[in-house]
Length: 104
Image 1 (cartoon, rainbow, N blue to C red):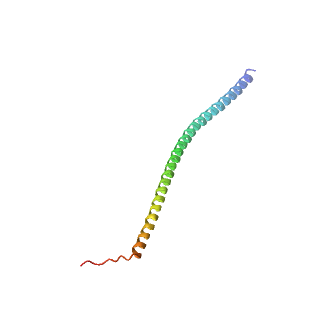
Image 2 (image 1 turned 135 degrees about the vertical axis):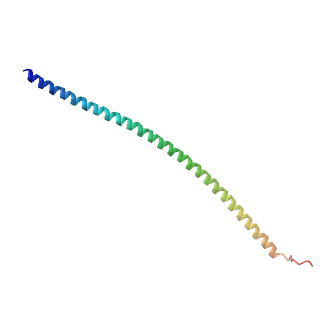
């Protein structure tokens, strides 16, 4: 009878060992996943911050580009105005009877 109880105890101890091993494995996996989640969250936050900085930079570039376009439009309008004025001046000169003579 003593021998039968010993086999039963060994089986119970083995079952406890297996349960403890599985629990340890689950705890290790949970700890790893938790640490991995923290790392992923940290990396994701870093990426989000960098993307926000890039977005701000793009907005600044767009504002500068709009400013350059406005300046370019003003310059174009001024060039058109000056060209029209120059054409008018040449018409006036060509239509006048004013003759240049060389001085001797």
